[in-house]
Figure (cartoon, rainbow over the protein chains, first blue to last red):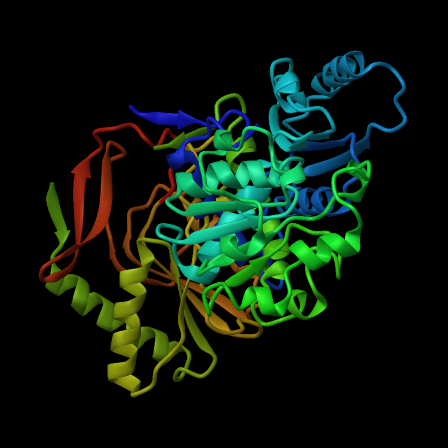
Length: 314
Length: 185
């Protein structure tokens, strides 16, 4: 019996293609649920989901919260900002407490890479990584793949350009792992100062100018310039960045005529993406938000519907 | 495996059911067929066909997937595949005939009624099945039945598509995939 067990969702790395495809397939059914008059199913009644967000994130937390509530689970939001103890102790104590409260799923966002794994090693609950440092953000990559599928009908044979702050982006990393796994070709583009030192680690072509990266692509994925992550030395000004790397209508014309434009949000309008592109007919940014809830419902369903041993048949 | 209803009997039975439906509702006004995925889909298609033959009217046919509404969602078979439900029109105030292949414990129908209610408030919900095999675990009954049959608990009833059409067959249960009380039919 060859079955890939999905005990946690910690990253795209190690997930495997059958499990990824199963999540995407399941998401389709949940997208239908989110478009009904009554956007709620009783499936996870009696289950408890804890959103443990040590980093501020309104969008992702809200998306997970809605996903849990639409499955009829009890959803509790915990922020980590009030805690002043050291990171390790805080997480360890917190996870013991949550276990004692019989949480079924813990959704964790943390500034430290590997935090989700740390939690998963210490809890009976299923753990979903909602972003850990510069490591991974698997549900974002899954919702991006789902959005592409909805618009293009396939991933195999498509070319996707991911542009912006590649070095600091867990979104870029998770996508660079997931999309090739599903048969798409990924190009990464960013200013030299925002590319990782070892670009070959990603295993896909890397560009330090945006124009050649956009040439003929089917999907343009712009990353948010994370102002809070930048000390100022990495690029001169936001205006300079926008001039050299922002997605304008003229640059978008380099991509395939039917190319779609994606962005994980929140948008820095006028920085990495111009207003007319963000609001233009190629933009699927709001579809990504809608897909986010459906994909997170699928992940929570697959993890929580079988206590102890959720399975994803290959 | 033995044949409970051959293709001709199923076809004739569904034509009768179609006639009973339009007779009871005095036509097709406000009538919607909703198949319970997946076994109900070919049955609903054939009932719709016979209604079209009888009344020269097309009626809406949709489907519901009940996976998310099962009373054993947390303990059932490992993550059954969820199909998307497809309700083609508003069911608010409609007269809905749920359609399934086999009526057994009644739990699937219970789940289907719950699922349907999330799309609106039908004026009435009825149930049409090919085989009613008894052994109900909930107070649920079919309004339209092609054939009622006593079938042992060690046997399963399936409605399958043969080259002649739909057939109802009985076969011994080989893999105990449905423990008592958790049957899906």
